[in-house]
Image 1 (cartoon, one colour):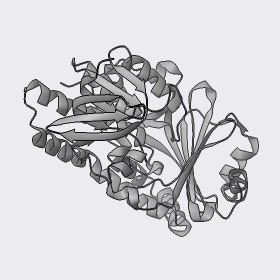
Image 2 (cartoon, rainbow, N blue to C red; image 1 turned 45 degrees about the horizontal axis):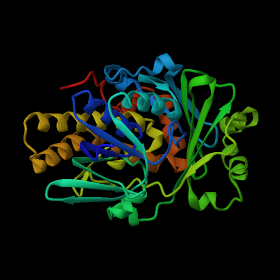
Image 3 (cartoon, helix red, strand yellow; image 1 turned 30 degrees about the vertical axis):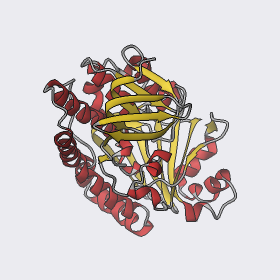
Image 4 (cartoon, rainbow, N blue to C red; image 1 turned 180 degrees about the horizontal axis):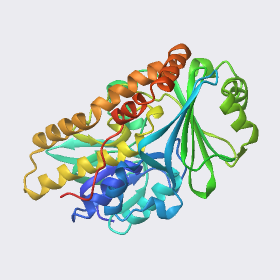
Length: 377
């Protein structure tokens, strides 16, 4: 196996795989190092804004040809049962990470190398990266993209600021057989968190919820928590009563941090959740990961074509572009998060939205981007 590449991508999720596709289409040699085998399920809301569809098509990825559900309505409810239904300004589609990652990985393998290993160390010396995996293998490249997700051991290894701070948030995800509209994404509040429901391929419903650990730990198990907390919301009670689980057990992830992250650390170019994590209630994390991969890939290709390493300039340009594209929507999401976990504020917010429905699309637009188009350059 080749040990030298133009780009090494640590993490083969949405951002990592999208970057690999984009970069390899521009004749750069790419290595993706992913610790898990494809395909696999991940804790994720599995709703994607339509803003990325044209860009994915330019990479020959067509989610709607693989049973992705077209979604154009939002339902939002408080714990008490107050709710509103709203058309989504741009709309989106529902597809599992199992399916979408598999489609991307299959395409990446046509032009790039993917290895299943865990990265234990990333060294940077004399303008060159050396990436070492748990089996002792060593690979080198001029650039490294960090796409290792919401929370990774690499964050601690790199001594990133947020990695040492405890977070009260954990997430639970599972698929169900249940009656649920194909064209709806729903967000339902419960004590200590909120739950998203939407259809994915194979006519399954993805349920993914974010919960405060202090509330969660007062219960003995996930089923008890769902029975005693989620089911206080009448919409979730109805869903759980008739839903048949597909997974043997739900997937979980803890210590989810919404602290500010840097797009570049130790000269590693971060993409997707490694660069910044939007609150799941805004339903746009998957689209953000894909969009950030596009931005980063375009900048890397421009610098390669100029035949200049100019690392400082590249890092500065990417940081500025990332902040210009995502910083505002992350800030809006943070404000919404604080409101959504307070039942009183949420109830007033829903009642206000029912009375003045025009404000909802404006809020949604602030957490979503405009349609991004094909490959460029």
